[in-house]
Structure formats: structure tokens, C-alpha cells
Amino acid sequence: MGKKAHTVIVRSDLCKGCELCIHFCKRSVLRFSPEFNIQGYHFAEADPAAECNGCMVCTSVCPEVAIEVHYE
Image (cartoon, rainbow, N blue to C red; front, side):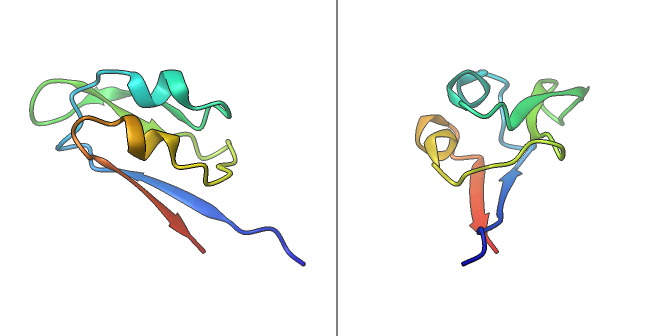
């Protein structure tokens, strides 16, 4: 049986850069973007080299509900 792929999507326009998702991600999938969003914050983004296991902790800790995890 093959491994499921998970994709993390961060809505950069909602992210306020609180860093909770980055702190709680055990696989270091999330990181700060060097860019700023429309609100002037460095927003979280998924590292394309990291592999998400779909634990969804990031979605639970995000106070802005800016993160989605999709199963492929």
C-alpha cells in the first residue's frame, strides 16, 4: 500500500506570523516566508522539501484559521 501525500496550504493573506504552526510542526514542514503579506507580516509557508505526515496540528493551533491540509 502506497504512502499518502499531504499538501499544506497557508492563506498568506490571513496569516499574522504568530509562529505557532512553525513551532508545533514536528516535521519542520512550515517556515517563515522572506516576503511580507498585505498586512505587513512575514507569513508561514510550506517548505517544498519537507514531507507532511498529515497530523493537522498546524490547523489546530492556527488562531487565524489560515492553514489547510489536503490529502492526495
